[in-house]
Image (tube, rainbow, N blue to C red; front, side, top):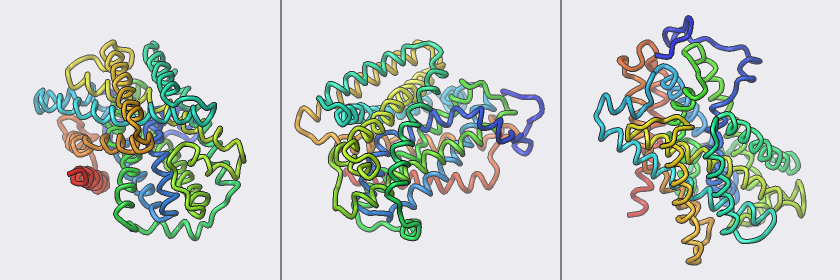
Length: 416
């Protein structure tokens, strides 16, 4: 157990001062790159364009559930000495661990396919040219980053910079266009206007409320070197990081509701979605939206490849550090395979936006397994000792888990 000086149970968690907590923010922003990937950006934009404010409630609920699972995952990663699938192997056998690794690689492949597509679309909006060429260049750049040593610190700095680009674009537009808080508040009442809203809403929720990303938090807190005295810091980190990502997704949905919905524009390309930014930058909207889409995709493509590869090699019993050879080799392979899945449909004439949305649906396959594993282990006192879940945490997590189960079941049945 990674012990600190005095924190020996969940009741003794130390809370950092606000200044100290802000200075040490880190892992949740790395995972925010996944939560605010191109899939969530595109889906929030399309949902706002089609349904205005009506599905706003889904982002709020998703954010709450994500914070709950991130807190549980942070605590689990700090308290335990071994990676999560290694612990699963010890308690339930190799097959259970391998299944987790396989689900992780499939989930990662779905997200990664969307990332490669979005890099191509983003660069097309910025400078023109072929999305295939730009997507290929982005994949090569991601592979180059993955090969670097001491990757965590470099990744953290890159993601802070890319998130700043997105903040400027979407919050700037929201400030210019304005919106009615009264009208927006009507979107906090749970409802689905029609069947398509269920499909889009569930996909959007799954990209933000990602149990796959929560599982990876158990690895990231180890990379950061947190001890049990840092659990309070990790909770703050999770809450702030996930909340900020949620606010940004809400801003994207609202700009879609304010700008695209009244005009009847349903985005089918990056240029269509860029219309949201015209009130802020006029004819430069495509440039700014392209930068935002590229930032979302490129920050996510590296993190996502590392998530899938780390969990996969852990499931197979190999070393899981970001700088380990197995993690890097699998991550590079993931990017290459995702590149193939991204552009073969385009060469066959498929709309890349449709391919991106379908890729997000594929990534939902492992949600029930990931949620069950983290819930069961975080309640196991042989594993967690005095840091096992409280009743309140379990109640909130169970509601979130049932929501994730509903998403997975809905998608499974929709393709039958």
